[in-house]
Amino acid sequence: MANDNWGWRARIGLFIVGNEAVPEAEWWAMAPAGVSIHAARVTARAPWLRWREDKSGVAPEDDLVRGCRQFAAMRLSVVTIGHSSSSLLGGKGWDESSIAALSPLLGAGTAVTTNGLDTQAALRALEVKRPFLVLPPWFNDDTVAAGVRYYADHGLSPVGHLRYDPGRKWRDLPPGELVGQGLGFDQEVEPLFRQIRTACPSDADGVLIAGTGFRCVAILDALEQDLQRPVVSANQASLWHCLRSSGVRQQVCGYGRLLRL
Image 1: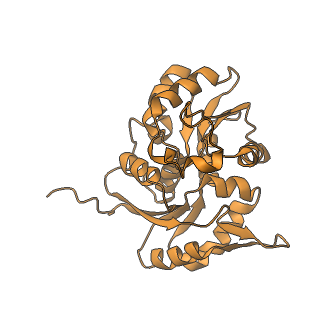
Image 2: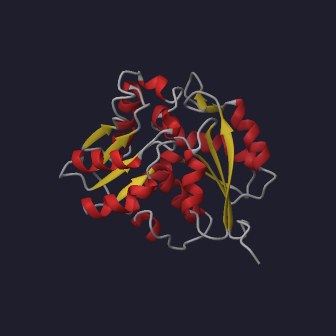
């Protein structure tokens, strides 16, 4: 019989940005046999669950409520909020509060996680304590600062960071206009590889490439070989963490040492 991508080992749900193609493409490239990927699209601004005024918890945007109701009927193993910006801008405590808000909507049989927790777990599994943080060009200054602060607040202080330069064609556009002008679909991985290899500080013990819409999994192995350090990406980390949560421990080759643990 031919492969039909049926999720007989695990079915994973992910919330992704409504107009992005990268997350599903990268997840399907990396997913082992018997694991299926199911996306719900979100158009709300980050963070996708808003803090209440008294910080007593978070309230999900309508897109997440709708997606949870659909996911709840799909017998999923785990669902992740596949959005780096939400975790970074939500800040300390947001991930846990978001899980508490979504878990009742999904039901007791489905685990819930976030990209922030996924990347933290990945870095700790690889014993990375001083990552070099690489961020997409559409992150504005506030989001970049929030990213550095987020990992520092969780005991993973970046030793430096890089906001990728997509080249002369895009350089005069502000970060908030890059995706709307088409950069999300015109991403090149070779210049990203060169910039990370050149900029990575010698005292960084690993690299974290944040942003689930940031195309990069094709260069993870090559970067690790050149830098001789672990390299983690947002989508790779979420897939790995979701596989672990689902009890799937099959090694996946070609996409960094994390998926070979």
